[in-house]
Image (tube, rainbow, N blue to C red; front, side, top):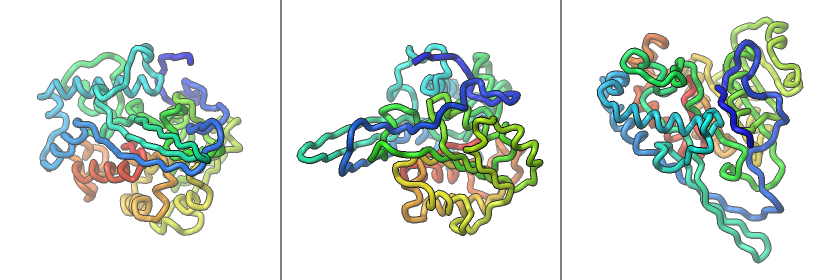
Length: 346
């Protein structure tokens, strides 16, 4: 596969990589698979565990800690470079070997399949960025206030290059039980296409994933002509846009999670992004994902801008009355332990 140095971003109506590709699943199994049992364990990296312990101090100053501990900055640089390599964003992708030394958290999978009298066993690792105190790109909030970095790490607070996504490779076959599956994206709090939805589709395209159907909700009334003018024409038949607010009654017909349970099967690849800036409704959706029987098994990847109580983010969010950093990190760990690849959305 050709490796190119790009940034996953939707800029001036154009994705810097192809987002109009044919949708395809990221879990490909050759031949008929019968009676497979897959188990997994989420393994947080040492960096993640250290941040959870560190965040127990309600007065922790994330930027000041980063400034005083250059070894932490070096550790973050290692996993950011690994993330870029896994997303094909690094010009030296082939030279980067991903391992425990890459400072990434992971899911360890074990699968046993029986077909007739034949038994096969597989083990593999799926990597994911560690949960850290910045809850976004680690070089977006403190740089350039305290230290200098390479030019390519001049990240904004909206940068999403730190995500490590499911990819269209053998290592991403966790729940696959047949060769047929669809890819669904549910964007809750979408706004115009060129904002979060375009960027997220562009990011997935860097790992070879397209979507069969895309569902988007936005509470703010948008100009419909302007909205659809901003959607690439090849995606018009895939995008379903609802210019209505969602509610805390998460399983009511027409609500996003109700639609997930109606449409999705375990063989499908399901992505949800949540960012509506209404904490009580957002947390109702998160708690439904965690507690509704069977729902977490349908969701592969989840992006959420959680407005926790944060001194470093107070300039953007104000005082939210939600959990502190420790509670936020533990919440995302809980989602990951359910088998959901949970990411802090910027």
